[in-house]
Length: 340
Image 1 (spheres, rainbow, N blue to C red):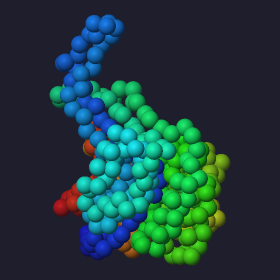
Image 2 (cartoon, rainbow, N blue to C red):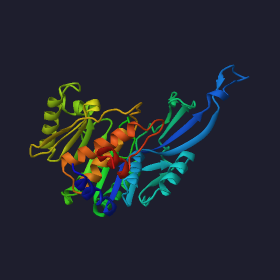
Image 3 (cartoon, helix red, strand yellow):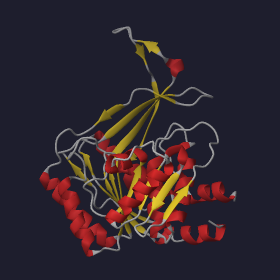
Image 4 (cartoon, rainbow, N blue to C red):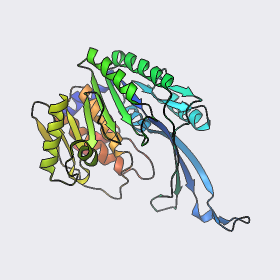
């Protein structure tokens, strides 16, 4: 990619309207000062003293954070939160982000707010060390009436936006935003607008999703196709091409240290090697940065190769942001790719 082509693509970001539908959660970081450790008189156990608490949208919210960092001016989050303290924090964090419109975000007493609580031991001059995470999830099925509200909002957003991102983050089937009934309803909506860009990512695999652009990692590709996740890169790309031909949509696969690959239904395949490491890394959030950058680039008219190069650079930036779930700006991506 030339600098001129980079400018041509990224200059379109400020004209886009996108929606992110899926499992939003609250990332809450508890920063612990080890120098203030005490022993509990009652239990005799060590007491970790928290000196700072910070929260930000996680899960699908991490994708949204990246869209904001890229300068997308209109972003609709579609998901749900509980009527609890975590839900209040999540909605407040969403509402203050530039360009984010919470018209379709649902707060309900029928759900708990999906929360990742991350205790971090912060020692000056050292990389933050994460202790055992404390998660809060929903363990019962998403109520049908709530799923119907989500389906209705999705149908409207297909009409109102340039692109739609789907993220399924939950492990327990039917407990999140993208239930079977929601996906079936979305498939019907997308059929009315076959040219609308929809990109999907799911940590439990994309089987059952409507035809759309698939983004997955090697393990998820293996689960979908039966190929060995540690197969040769060329074999994984061939498997991705088979999926693209089957869905009629492009497929993107992240391959960790082997970079990223993309395939289109017409037989085009591309592979972009990973960029060199520049120090200590933390891979949390890299996949969501890829999802955001692929979608925005494609919506702005990028080719598969160009979208891969931009997303690959964004992931490289994010993995070098330690102790947080990071994001990459257009300026940071430009500096990494072209040194300017």
